[in-house]
Each structure stands twice: as structure tokens, then as C-alpha cells.
Length: 149
Image: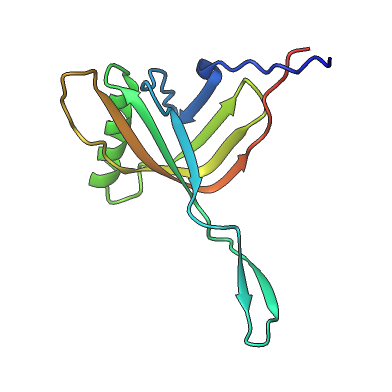
């Protein structure tokens, strides 16, 4: 019987950097989600059935991540968002980087900004903030995990 490969995964080895801010205390469920806003290719079909494949260059990505309220990064992200809203210039646009040290997935974006402040909620359970951001000019590489030898 063949030996199946095993790939270890440690969520703490997935590191994101939002400008100079490096969050570390992620929420209990979904940590980080990077989603394209549309397809990279669409199809235009004529009446006679001819098809043209159209490359869409205006695709940006939505970034969502959840941090425990205890993470000091929340204060820094809130300050970045507030400065951006209150400034006459786009002062909240920063570089973004995500590296998965479990494998080879990564994401970089030349332009990233907080698009929405988290909801402020209080419950009987622990609290977390869900941050929403936009990644423009992003290079997203979805790759494999690194297998044990």
C-alpha cells in the first residue's frame, strides 16, 4: 500500500501585513478571505453563435479578516481608516502582503485600503472585529501546501 503524503498546516504561519500593520490575534473562525470581484474573462456571444473571450482588467479583490478585540492592530487600523476619511488626500492607501509559510500561496497588492469600519457589537461571548478592505492591482497566487518528506 502506498504511503499518502501529509501536509501540515499551522494558521499562525499565515502572515498578512497591511501597510506597516501586522495583525496577529485572529478570530475563532474564518481568518482571512481574499475574493476577486469578478471573473477574469467574460464571454460575448453573437447571434450566429460566434464567441469572443474578453479579458477583464478591472478586477480588484475584497479582503475580509476578523481580529479579536484584544489585538492592538485594531487601534492602528481604525486610525488608518479615520485619517483616510478625514483627509483631503487618500492617506489610507497602503501596500498589502500575505504570505502562507505553510506552502507557496501569497498575495501582494500595490494599493489597499479599509473600505468599511467594523460593526461595534457586544455579546455574552467574546468579541471580534471584522475588517473589510479593497486590494487593487493585486497579484494573488493560490498554490499548494508543502508536504512532509
